[in-house]
Length: 449
Image (cartoon, rainbow, N blue to C red):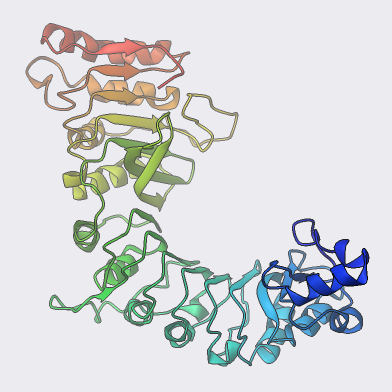
């Protein structure tokens, strides 16, 4: 068999003597012994040599390996022994799985299937024989399985469901998804992600105001990638009282209306007094993360709420962040620290790499920046990256004389990573005005935050 080091520690013991071999073979579950098969394992020749009490792990991350299907399929036919499946597969192998995996897998605890190509075959509703009662982890990446809502209610021990890169052929309505998830009282992590913005709910079938919501009592982490309409429809149908992390990423759209997200967070135990916020402006995406310093101390940041969108132009990115921050402003009123970065590799220490970026010298209306900053009424510390320093400085120049306290009234510390001479020049009128208003702001030229 092909055994990795973590699984083969016992392999030498069975060759020491007959007694040791007997002890090992008689206690495979207590010793957590498992057999790992991959595409090169001659399953038909060797698998039956080992005691049937040994659980089987089927692991293969090389989907293009020649003849990878034969040994994998042979191992899958031992459905009563398969303990874990972790496969990166091709369309051809997925079609074969549809035929082979029709029976229940009574000891299966983990199922990870990943496919990189588009137009993958649809998993049939006979998959897993409709029930594998020990299943705890279900990951289907890029694999359409529209019958998933029929399968989930029969797997009450599930603690993690990851259904991402969903093609249109695998679309499941928010109503069906919420109903299916309601049976999973042990579920802790859910990830849902669509490939295309065309995967969206029927606008004529929006949730009624008097909707009875499904309760997911154990859920602590929820990640979503898709349209705002789908997310809104889904969170309107569920309650997650124990959740501590919500992460969403939306396809590009001009206007965002997210009342159900705000209400959804309001029904959770997520603390309302967020301490920190981070804004990430990247080449094709923009994100806002809010949360707290890690309770263990140090500079680690524990995100609680993350919202992102796919868009290229900086003015659209600023508009999106301003819209979202305005929508969730009740949760931002106590934020004291704001970190702004301007590239995928712009790290917390201010360093950046030579990655190609769009022309961010294009004009961005100053009111857009000011609309964003007004939300952070309690902000005391703000870090500005070099790439956006002049643009932000230009916007802050409008906060002079009688408007000096119109935004960022509590700001006391401004961090400008060097070199930032042009940023300093752009920001100086704002600093001077605050100095004269008896609410000074101290500027730090440092890479640390």
